[in-house]
Image (cartoon, rainbow, N blue to C red; front, top):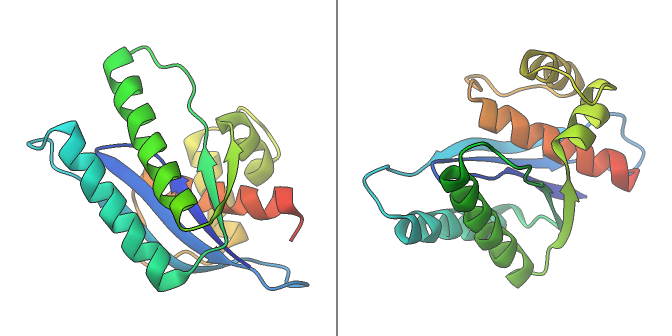
Length: 159
């Protein structure tokens, strides 16, 4: 099975494609990226770019499911609204390709990856790097988070 993991945003979107064969112990990262949009663009233009990027990723890798992080309330309402709109656009694109949508809270993701729902970013990074072989150059939190979200999808689907 192939799962598309997404850490949603409108400035940076973490994207990861993971595969796990039935009976395999570990997932394999087929692709990961931190897709960035320019702050010089307005939100609708950024959403369009995100949508086009996801269409390309889905066409190339043909995932069966989207595993995406649910939003939690942030202090900055403007940022929260933009991320919420990006998340909606991401779900729309994925659903239009027939992907099953799996949604997880940050607490569920941290718990699935580290065993502790209030784990730090560093703890998540450390466990992700132990659970899968990270491609060279993976540095962005968004990319690591997308990988963690995909791992959570596999854990909850019991694959």
